[in-house]
Length: 140
Ligand code: HEC
Image (cartoon, rainbow, N blue to C red; front, top):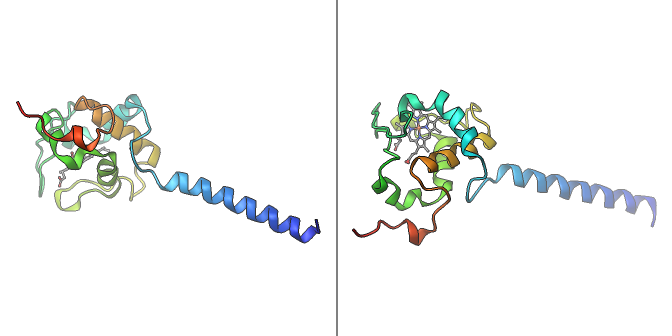
């Protein structure tokens, strides 16, 4: 092969590899991949002031109070069926209620956001992303 072709091939392959790595980094989506222990350590420092150490919340600043993650009814809300919802809250915050945009402000890095999501789910005893059907409130 002519040298120029080889160079182009090398550049193309490098670009594809870089784009792949970038996509894997930027596009955290779906079930969180992290560990509860690592999430708990951060939670204890940065989150308990408003969410309480046991996750029962109830602290009201300016808008909605912090949710009670120990209440099964709270987990019955379909919006909490996916980790994407939690990822969005921790990344972008909820400004009207005083929830900090931890990710956007660079205070918490994406891998630790994943760890936090996994930990928050353990508070409610919901270890994994529940399938939408299973997330519907159970009739008693
Ligand atoms: C200054 C108080 C404050 C701190 C500190 C705080 N939060 Fe929040 N957070 C809130 C409030 C208030 C809400 C409710 C927002 C709403 O529903 O409008 C909330 C909501 C959330 C939600 C959405 C919960 C749900 O079930 O709807 C998540 C997830 C969350 N916080 C994670 C965290 C994590 C993780 C930390 C620590 C890194 C943290 N928060 C620290 C005030 C705080």
